[in-house]
Image 1 (cartoon, one colour):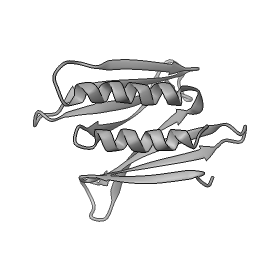
Image 2 (tube, rainbow, N blue to C red):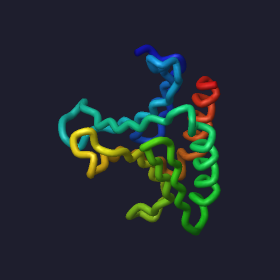
Image 3 (cartoon, helix red, strand yellow):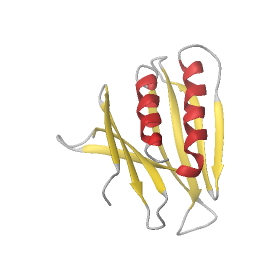
Image 4 (spheres, rainbow, N blue to C red):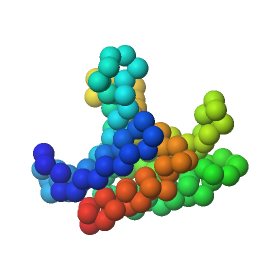
Length: 144
């Protein structure tokens, strides 16, 4: 599927890709992919993606903005967004080097075993959070 809108954001060793696409049912969705050099194999990349559906896109951006107010200071932030059988969890966490980041996790029942969950997550560190939010907000604008 071709993207209706694409944006790339470089943040240190991570490159984020925001792609708005249209499903067969004509509803639009956003795929956010984080790509980093793989630990093994030169020239290889590790990629992780989450999909944000239009029904929760505005709430998702709002939660990112809330997390951004906490990420550069102190305190905790946790937010859950639910749509159908998909849950998004946004959490501000602290890395070993004391930098803070937003962990964004998409969770849904596994197709192979409905009693288990498939989880995919990406991390956005505080030095890239504002630019990341701006890029996601721009992409969400193309979903409307």
